[in-house]
Image (cartoon, rainbow, N blue to C red; front, side, top):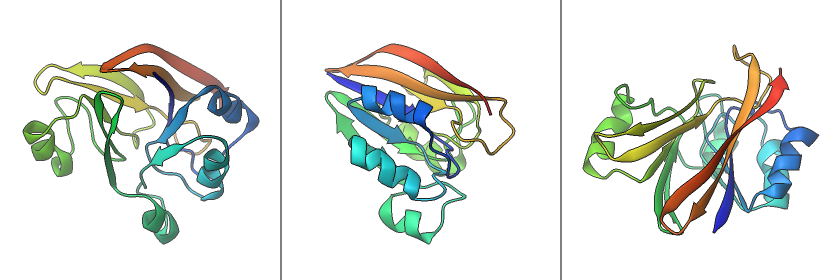
Length: 164
């Protein structure tokens, strides 16, 4: 069983509120637009980190993190990318592979809009944690927390950090 903290779009921002939730997790997953690598270096000192780079990330982030991160967590196939879209509106760069080889859990960031929905067509769960940084149009900073237990994804929680 793994307790996962999912965040995205930090845009170089990390604070004690985020770190409080990091300390409660077994792993932290970051869906891109990291900004300064101080963010991921701080996270890695506390917990195992899986991350992808986003469209605002520089060459240092792109050398350290992939564009797409596909892996198994317990019995769940996971795919994290930054710009992925959502069911019915997937980005053209992922649409074909999602149909041919869908994960059980598809995660992206980029939109700054928290969204969790089941994709019946591809039989997968889509998650976007919104944005926990202070840059962007979002009004409330958000993250997601959930548990992966064997092949089950459960106990999903929305974490509202507050106004930016």
